[in-house]
Image 1 (tube, one colour):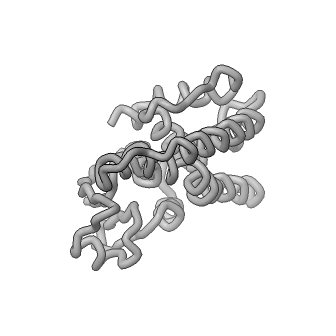
Image 2 (image 1 turned 90 degrees about the horizontal axis):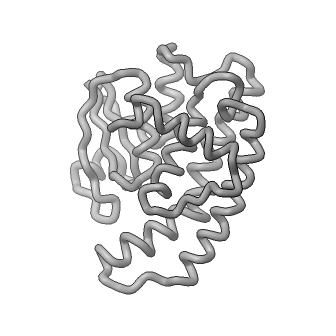
Image 3 (image 1 turned 180 degrees about the horizontal axis):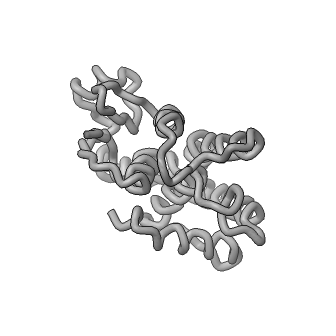
Length: 202
């Protein structure tokens, strides 16, 4: 059985939970507060970041990209990676976009200001940082609305890793009440479709 070290508002952790649910794996979860990691967790991942997935061999797989490639190597159903190298490259590009760019420009500052600053540091959030992150969010939403024009999924005609990782990030924003798709019909339809999947119920 797999064990996933995660945090509820960590979009990377949410991504792996969605992938595990799509594959219908039975797994345990271990909640980890990323701002105060436990010693046991740091032995698994000295860098202290999430997610970490312990597989059946009791081996720690660290980070979304590593876990994604691990699952892809198992040749599981449903197939969440494409055969064509160009589509593979695009799936990995989008996953990298959310893991690096989206997180840095939007989620990290918003989660810090709206959650961490209040809960952990007991200080008032910085409204300037929140406005800047929301301005960045508008660009990202418009860009992905453009990518989804006249398409059912981000890459090709079927669900892929890129859809799950993108939707995990947007669902974190949705949970914080910060999504506005009024001007982006394509991404709104895509997001509602992904959210309706059984894997999202957990």
